[in-house]
Image (cartoon, rainbow, N blue to C red; front, side, top):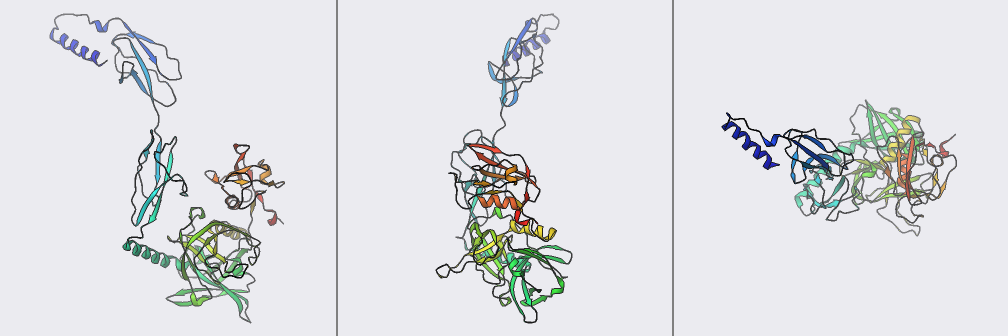
Length: 500
């Protein structure tokens, strides 16, 4: 086709030189036929037109976006609706696919340009981060499945960066230390002492800690343990300024409510003083080995707001009807930061100062009488959020109920993820959803969630349900006889133990 255009140009020039003569242009006489071919859905008949004129090119559909019509004899030449046709030609429809992208989540707020991955990817970007060493890309946000090259992706995929603190650099250690100093300075006034006075005449009672999680005007909301508030007659709040201890008296304090099952209680107090407010973070963002800091008042207020460092040792420890824990039933964060009597109700913070739980109990001896160390447990932030919400709104906890039974820490369905249904409770949400014995629940979603939440074990399902509201529509994803099924929505009913 390029040769034809060149000949036309020569002819025009010749006509300009010999303008006194009238010539017949053989290229502009007769008809030409345009034939269409390619992998498309429509049936396109050939078009016959006068030579030297453009034609209306049809739009066609295929498996991907239509790119245009190309000369079968020269696939680099695209015919447009403005190009005249001078000879019979066959045009081939070409299509272009939207390229599959690889997105990158650095985990530190930084940005990396996505990679187009039409072919297997042989190399990936290596990001840098101050004070950290890059430790590789992972296919999941929990950093369990490392990327192996070459990487082939068939749909848009996000990779997650793993980082390791660069402890080999002494300057980095000093910078990290200073960041912790700054964090403690910012959050420590959100942690208070609580004195439970059971008998004012005898001066009997106990001491614990609490955490400010909300403020409106001069009113502060404090979360603590139920057992810190249990059987109180009067309460006092203890705070510190410049290593001096001060007291907020009972008249300025109001009891909102408490729940023995989760061991969470809420009080408020009024003060014109400025206290920090702890900021919750999502429990599900935590990782094993992450540094944590316990802030509270062990052994009374002589050691007010002691700060102890540790790491997260376990993310899903379940306790129910355990000796010494009263009515407590639920799962907790295990960590090895030092806590002692008086730390109850105190805060557990991340290195960034995020409030992830309240320290509730520790195990300090085994059944054989041996002393144990480093076994501290905190009620996680997501549990605190839902319980404080109910206590503020109703003065009690109203738990949604799903209605299945399953083993907590073992699998009975020959797979290493999901919740194996052993029985379904009559007149429950599970029954309304059509759940059957033998189903494996692998996802949960209420109508306020943007996507299905993966439930790899019983505690993840349990907390997802409890973090919903009574009456809220919810659905689940299940595996039944090898087939994956998503149910319809059904409302969550009130827990039988909470019904009148």
